[in-house]
Picture 1 (cartoon, rainbow, N blue to C red):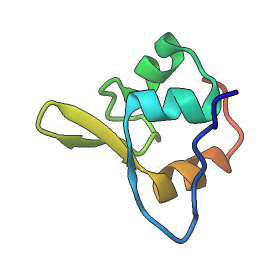
Picture 2 (picture 1 turned 180 degrees about the vertical axis):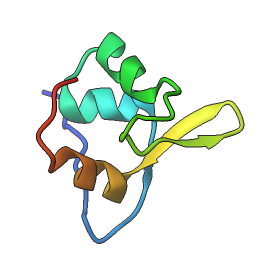
Picture 3 (picture 1 turned 180 degrees about the horizontal axis):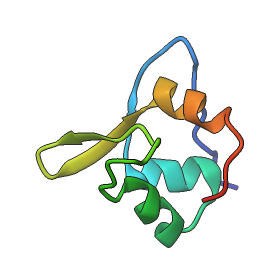
Length: 69
């Protein structure tokens, strides 16, 4: 059985779309919606060139609020 990734709240790392899918079990289309550019989105995406990332601490904080995706 494969080991799932885990997060240490005291350590900030940057997560890719693939990391989010692995951590949560969410599908590609759901994660793509979160990473899509939307100025009104509350998802904490950081754009670095053509790469979109989210910090682990910001992702953990974002998941603490109940919402529908």
